[in-house]
Length: 443
Ligand code: ACO
Image 1 (spheres, rainbow, N blue to C red):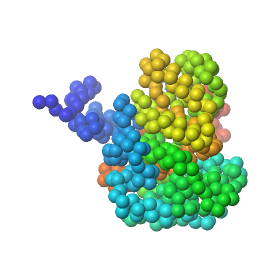
Image 2 (cartoon, rainbow, N blue to C red; image 1 turned 30 degrees about the vertical axis):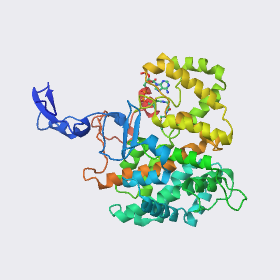
Image 3 (cartoon, rainbow, N blue to C red; image 1 turned 120 degrees about the vertical axis):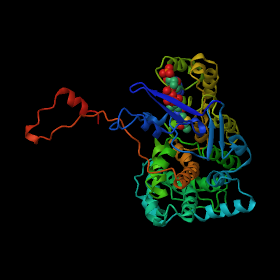
Image 4 (cartoon, rainbow, N blue to C red; image 1 turned 60 degrees about the vertical axis):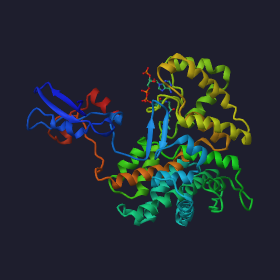
């Protein structure tokens, strides 16, 4: 009978090792340490820069099948959640593992809304940022500052404390995000209106002017809610890995979420939707699309919003976002960039280069077009990602904290530097050679 093991022969010694193949088709990397040439040998390691083939945890939160274009939160297909749920319900599902019943949902909503206000000192803190501060930088700084307001968050092993910080973070993120936006506009900050929905209140804090009460447009409110659902979690991506890795030092959740938000800020992660808008604006018109495609195929540039590390078929979120764009345009008017996107997508799905490289539209291909039509500046795009992703970060963090197999995250390295050298006094050190100058130029 076939055995669920891997047999490895070490050709240096001729020895054979049998390594169990575990759940999910993984072997424990630490088993490689048994493979050594002698008692003084450290044993083998696996080398995996960028973790392209390393599972860092066992998780129950999100399932992705990149070949088939499947995304599920806690087993529920993203399409069904986007169609029938609202963001707060999905946040409950992601954080707690089950969809809430009516009573649990009401209690959860109440609990989140209790925490939409922020301490007045945090407001003063935000007002200290320069007039042209990037809203994402403000968000990173302010979330980090929150750790000083809630020292009880240090009790990460206490379930009630974890619950409280989760509610606070999900409740306060829209307030901080909206205030960051108002700050860049030189507008007074708007306090939360808890009579509105989670996304309705966010729109109010962003766009309310002199009216007594802001009335969100229901189509835009629902569209933003769906976009929030689509961004709630995406398993072990760069920012979630940052959340888990920083959290593994047992720091409080605010510090870890600040780190995750910083990771999201990067153009290769939460900033790609902005790059799509810049690309579309640069192309300028549908008739220039073939010329642009030619330059992509010549390897001169990338088609932003296409391709994904995990999805090797159409990103299921992109399908939903594309449909949503038309609903938003009914209210905001058509964003002319959509015509360029549609033409790029049409060619991309037929062209040999894109087909052979398995490049399909990802979630960022259409989100920027919607955000822009709704009146958001590009600097707000990653902020709109960070708000809903907070529920995913908290779910993944809580899973990590409770996992007895997890310890402080600490990868190994392969040392490629100098061997032992003797210290010499400064006056006896030779002038640097050209090569050494070049080396020190690296930083
Ligand atoms: N346009 C043109 N060619 C591409 C693209 C693209 N968008 N993406 C990948 N390729 C090509 C690469 O040049 C490479 O070609 P080669 O094998 O002939 O050298 C091949 O496809 C494999 O690409 P990699 O970059 O090795 O794939 P990786 O998994 O490392 O990168 C990534 C994935 C970063 C998303 C990449 O596809 C990309 O840069 N896309 C554009 C940026 C983007 O849209 N990012 C958002 C991702 S979604 C998110 O983070 C929310």
